[in-house]
Amino acid sequence: MDISEKPVVLITGCSEGGIGHALARAFASQKCQVVATSRCLSSMRDLQKDERFYIRELDVQSDENIRKVLKAVLDKFGRIDIVVNNAGIQCVGPLAEIPLSSLHRTFDTNVYGPIRLVQAVVPHMASRRKGKIVNVGSVAALAPGPWAGVYTASKAALHALTDSLRLELRTFGIDVINVLPGAIKSNIGNSAVASYNQMPEWKLYKPFDKVIQARASLSQRLKATPADEFANKTVAVVLKKNPPAWFSYGQYSTRRVDRWIYWVATVIRFPAIPVKPSSLFTLFISQSHRARRKMDPEQFRSRLSNLAFGNVMAAAARNYQKELLVQEKAQTSSTSNEDVDLEELMDDPELEKLHADRIAALKKEAEKRQALKRQGHGEYREISEGDFLGEVTGSENVICHFYHREFYRCKIMDKHLKSLAPIYVDAKFIKLDAENAPFFVAKLGVKTLPCIISFRKGVAIDRLIGFQDLGGKDDFTTKALENVLIKKGIISVKKDEDKDDEDMEKINRGRAVRSSVHTDSDSE
Image 1 (cartoon, rainbow, N blue to C red):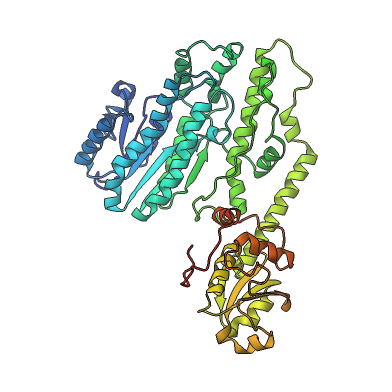
Image 2: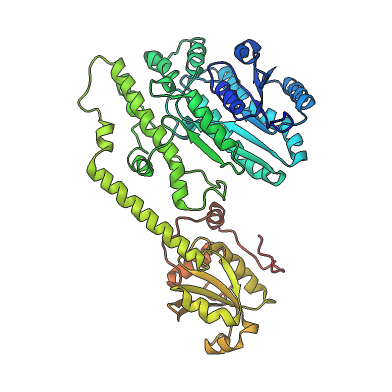
């Protein structure tokens, strides 16, 4: 392949022995032209004699340095196709005592560094309407534990920024990918230990010094995934024409969905930090993290997909707790019969059956919702008089709004019904222009508009006429309408689990749609 055809990949943090170094070799093996960077050229000495690599010194904490490196790369290759923000540092210590300077340094490298590079390279990628940005986070950020709060917070921030970037840059043809390594064999443990040795002597946490230090190398257990294996898998995904929004690989990064359900059910609440150091590791996590909202719509279209994302959380949660329990036993002179055998508990046949039943129930519910959406549920649609009978008899529960285009109260009702439709998927929400449906208006006795009629199996069972049950005023909230519909039995009390966060926010705010509405626009 001619050099002008090879994808140009710029990677930060390529020091020998690290994930970035392995990624550089993996991209090179796929016939990419790799720009390998690090704060120190000597840390990439083995790459300097290989023509597949263009070696540059890059400090992600320096805006000027970033601009110079990008200029050099563009002068040499004319383009940058992929940027991999891999450079990162560990930070271990109790949040109550860790120096703020360490926190600043960690965020400057792990969060601000990637953003600096993104802001510098995006104008070039946007001008070509092509490019990929890969941000390397960490599975640890999805299940924060003690002693690594600064590091996990920095990676959680990077995850959030990456999700926002994906939405913002999509219009310019730029893909943004969140990569979450599990436990990967690399030099990050040694670097973390070296950094920890420079920390001040703890005060309150002095009795925990050994276990805190052990946390620095927790990911470097014998079961850790080789960096080359992780890199090859990651590169294969990144080079796809349509890469996923999130990708995770490595020890502790994936496990069956039912492990996540078990974790949420049994591990989300742990007791407060006990006084005795030997009991500290029964504290693992104070609350579960909700599966990330607003994932890439092309990748996460159902509740089951969200559960699949929960695999990442489950693995980190379960295995991280086990690691901490092992360390606790190693640090104490005696063992307690009260220690829970997590492996035995996880393999309990009754729990396995419970997990299987839960998965089956979730799958059945998801299939039901998908079937309803194929029938037109989950959205607020206008129909014609000719479609009316088919729509009303085609679903078990139908809510029809008889309206007039010029009546502002009908427009107010439209706004509220549009907000409720995606939430109550069990019901089909439709509207029919009364002026164009004289037969059904007369047949159903519709005399006042707006008029909402509920149909159950094709039979009209109840109706809401005008605003008479809503205080007779125009400034009622969506929540008020929702309560009236529930009271009348028009919609069920149980809300659909797949509701959109934006719709729920509207319900919680109780935003009123007032009489100042003068158009048929569906936007609020």
